[in-house]
Amino acid sequence: MMDTGLIPAPLVVEGAPDGRFTLDADTVLWAAPGTEGTARWLSAVLGAALGLPLRPGPEDAPQAVRLLLDDTLGPEAYRLVAGDTGVEIRGGDAAGVFWGAQTLRQLLGPDAFRRAPVRPGAVHEIEHGVIEDAPRFRWRGLMLDVSRHFMPKEGVLRYLDLLAAHKLNVFHFHLTDDQGWRVQIKRYPRLTEIGSWRARTKFGHRASPLWEEKPHGGFYTQDDIREIVAYAAERHIAVVPEIDIPGHSQAAIAAYPELGNTDVVDTASLTVWDNWGVSKNVLAPTEATLRFYEAVFEELLDLFPADPDRFPEFSGFFHIGGDECAKDQWRESATAQARIRELGIADEDALQSWFIRHFDTWLTARGRRLIGWDEILEGGLAPGAAVSSWRGYQGGVTAARAGHDVVMCPEQHVYLDYRQAPGEDEPVPIAYVRTLEDVYRFEPVPPQLTEAEARHVLGTQANVWTEVMEDPARVDYQAFPRLAAFAEVAWSRLPASAERDFAGFERRMDAHYGRLDALGVAYREPAGPRPWQRRPGVLGRPIEGAPPNV
Ligand code: ACM
Image (cartoon, rainbow, N blue to C red; front, side, top):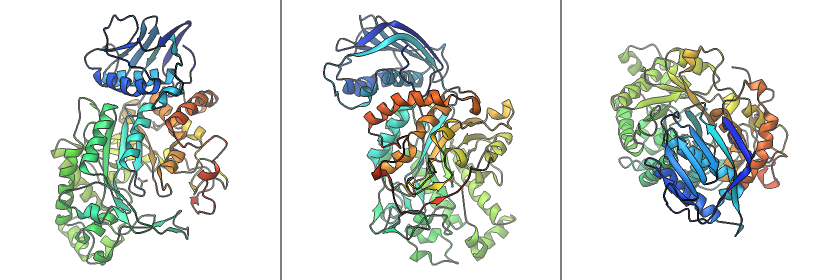
């Protein structure tokens, strides 16, 4: 089969370059039971792009795209065969069929990524051949921070399409932080009335003297969330919501001042934070705070239902943050200190563990699984809890050795807010240089783990924090093209980092840039930012040198 630059690279490609199959108005779509979702997606998306009806038709039609399940294939695996009578996609499950359909779209060229035909009368053909494929990791994710800068619903749906196009299947939805609360909670309307917007915003990183002197905000209604979750599910993407506690909570405290440490700060005068960093305003460790968040989580569990049929290995995860909780206020607060004594625990760090363990037990009792940033390991967790290892590999090593599942997202490798090149032209440069090649050479499994321990590595995700990404085009710039390299790391069975064929990946990227252009992705070009992608004079916080190997 012609090397059309498939990304992520499939496991096996066998070409028969003398034959070609042409998709045209007579090509029908035959969908066996269990593949109806992919059939709908193909006729809606591919049909619109190519201007073809792709009508339902019989299996033995002279020309067809045929979709079926095949239980000899593994989870999410597919086998795509193109021959004289059409294209057959067999999947080990419904997700496998869907990923096979994504491959078919890539084989059809960049026009297949548009929303309407641009070349009337164009011939849409693919070479005969066979592709066999299956993912390396089950959890292949992207975290998007919609708190620091809000991503309107249309933008989120678009990102779900971009994930699907790269065979990524987890959307970690960072919904709350100091700078904004982004989801409607009916019982507590002030969370969005007050908590979802701020009067102004720091432009650049903390050191920057600049301010964007206009209100910034937005939130998703509960129906918006239902739509996002359903849209993701149709694309075999699990949505993992994150509500960050007990730190990163200033927006919630601004809305409901009683959630804060009222005996040490005048929380009634707090506003949603307009600057970056780690706020010292954290939740008070009171029974009232626990009850408040239980009520919030009750509403959210309904909005983000467990879906074990579709996501057997990680259905029902709920992310509670748990990172970077400043302890200053707890040290000063008589209420917090009384709580420490009453619980008979050692100190403020133990108080943080008590907070997390409360919700671990609470979620487990409701058949759900807690996941949090690696700080949650400090203090012990219920067996089902999982960890997002962000401060390097160490959290992942500790978690896996303690029998916890782990998602590897070390900041030194896959924080896509980090700058992608040295030099003055990178917009608002953050932290280390992480080039396309660096991301391509990222190895998710910590080398210290034994094979048995490594089975706890559910997979990997890239994280996009949006302090310096004021609009969706800036998010595109930071995410792409590196997310394409990340997708290949997460899906494909690549050799060890040093042996990876980056030059070959770059050659396939030539084709992939055409797809990203058709999709309207404002990626960073290999030569650097375009003039309007620069932010001259806006201070970031670059760190010089290579990241530590931790
Ligand atoms: C994080 O980057 N604070 C998880």
